[in-house]
Image: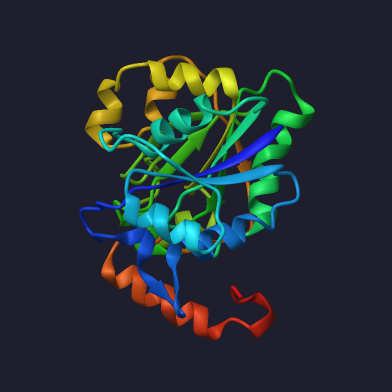
Length: 255
């Protein structure tokens, strides 16, 4: 069984109460859930939260929601806790709760490597960077990967460093840079192993939980997507998400 888990932490530093922020008259967690439900490969979808306010709203909208401790540090650790209470879950999809317009096709793309190759334990999505502001924004995580499409490193800094060309616009056009889209697909055993490991040095330095996998020798397959998404981390992001919502055709808006 393939289970999608949406971690939803209430006490966001930059945007308190983020899962319940209003977008078009509905809370953001509702939009994320409805968008993720469009994935064809997910058998069950749940929200994992640390806060009764989020839990109550999910109950109101008929969303399957599980309460987790409030001292869990990362979204993936929260997903692991929720997954540990399930039976029959072979593949776990960790879907960010602040991606209200995530495409179901994106989720399916990330799942597929685990269905076709038993050697793949973890997968995630990447997309070519096309904007200079993304390249230099610490909020946009950059990634480099090997010839077999396994991640080598993630960073908030621009990587790779192009030694012989300092024209960043030209480097972007050449396709040197990729950004990470924070959607993770785990085989259940790999997720529980990840959660059992202590936070790693590079993870704490960069504040990127996926580095815990790399530092511990757990390979992560990257899948390039052409789809984009809107991650809501700040009040400014929220305003952009609201503007995007009102530009959507009626048949793509959450009902």
